Length: 301
Image 1: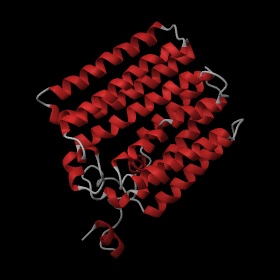
Image 2: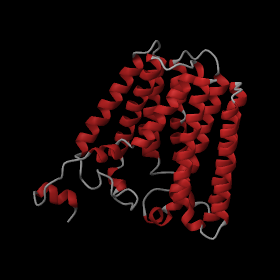
Image 3: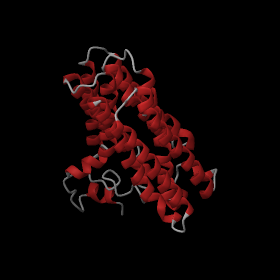
Image 4: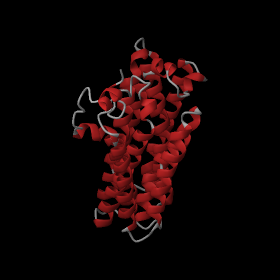
């Protein structure tokens, strides 16, 4: 008998949801990454941590948390079919779906209201557009086509734009476009590595994916090209920003060499079948490092 059925019949008691469960529902690492990207977009234009910078960063965090919670609610039935996701709180019936839906809508409203506190309504409109793109386009589309990752990536490119617009959006347009491109180029291999790491799981599931069209070796080649494009784009940042900070240049150059060497080595070695989970974590860390470098360069150069 399913866990949810047992709970409804009163046979077992539902355990109280923990903070870790809610962190999983709002996809805390992704939400924090979006908030950091919005903060980076702000300080690129206005290199100061003021009230507006804090407001846009916190508001985007709330917005991203709400959109992620709504995504968890929308995907609760699909998540039960995958080994990678069946242990999440909603598939395990650890949290009532209506609670997640209410929390998601509350977080989205708070995020939009926070963005409306800024000098322009455009950050709030962009934030709403990102939610619509993520929950209204990407989430329903991913059950129909593997190309759903494209609107998903477009949504992930918006946080730095929101931060830049919140700061006034008067100049540094090329710089913010480069940062947005970094995020877009990063997100697609981020998802494809998940597919490689869980390919048997995806083969048994219901969602279309890239291995429906390409062999493992071909997908590895595509991932390498996209990651190479991502790290090359990071090297453009100090150029378009006009940065003279040697630490920034060296950090991004070292990041370039290490990441490409790891990816090439992993896919060319005898342990390539076990490399994808490690590369997935390395790629996540890579984006975090790049955002930290961008923020530090903008504030201290």
